[in-house]
Length: 348
Image (cartoon, rainbow, N blue to C red; front, side, top):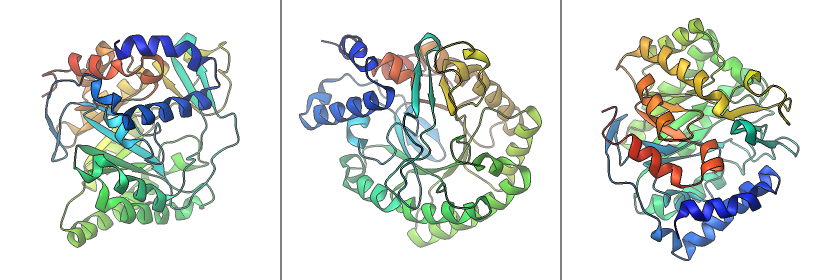
């Protein structure tokens, strides 16, 4: 029985649960299946290497951060055939996140709204989970570690949280993503402003270079940005990325706009909207970044990838790699292979 058929049978049951409960049930079931060796039966995409950030990706389709915030499911998720996986967002100290309910499906729009708020067990537990994974121990592939700030850290001191997390995760990461674009931590997106971003990137770069000397290994740093920026902001961010020699940009996080889901159940819930409605928003940001950056640094495209065609559109817009999140909820694990097949040989 194919994973596509299995997921189509399981989906009605999962969608009968609230979104967060379904999320945890799916991941815990996948982890059990992996422990039993069942995930080894899943077909993997053929190898289709990409050289990005000085790293070798076995295929260009990755898992976006947010699905596995604590690194609890690394091995099970890696078994789905991703070319790379990104986990987090993690903060220095454990925090519960926002009150429940805080995740909502909008199936008519193939969308999700979440206001999770960086719920996680803290960076020390996160690092321990990474170290315990076979994926890390056996160096099976590329793992990105996504870092953020605690909700109760004043925005003026946000850089302290990012630097602490960078130091803690650096030895275990293939690359590190700096998340300054979640709409669910108060004032976080202020860090995308010109002066704030310059100050943050300057200190991150200095720490990255110091850690590279300490660990005798250079770990690339990527910046994850929001889709809710205009052409001028895109240009400013691109300039800052080049100025501070950041290694990549991930475009984009979730949107706070609701134009595409007006009138649908849950549309007015606060939080970040992901899935199909963010597709064109993120593509516009990717095109704007590509126009400014050229080939100076790579773009990882995220947002609304629900089939092979939408993965190809991200590459056509200027991305070197893509990441999936909401599409997995609506399409299941077969989406990984579909996107990998669609991108085979593309964008090299």
